[in-house]
Image (cartoon, rainbow, N blue to C red; front, side):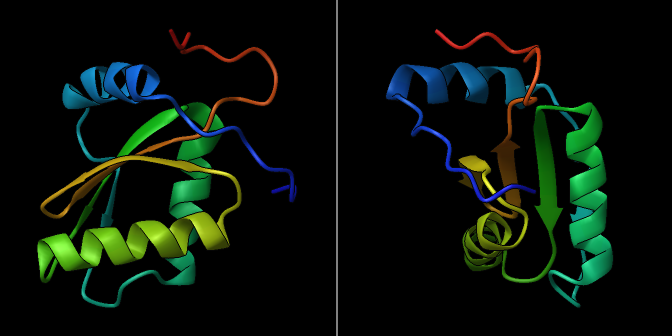
Length: 104
């Protein structure tokens, strides 16, 4: 991923993405081994075909999801953490060309 930065989401954009993300099923599950290279690769692959993904963690849900979300943004490049609830996080990365999700 390039080292370019992405603009912060406004609260209305975040709310819009949470609404869309509510109906999604988790695409990637992070097990007890945490953020392994295989999980990182699976998330990168998911972002090749989806702009908005849901990821589920195991273990202590709230602490793991928040910590892993921070790690992910450091390791996979510019990604928005839209929401973390329990062991679930919603992540957003617009397609570089022709984004599908239109933000308000």
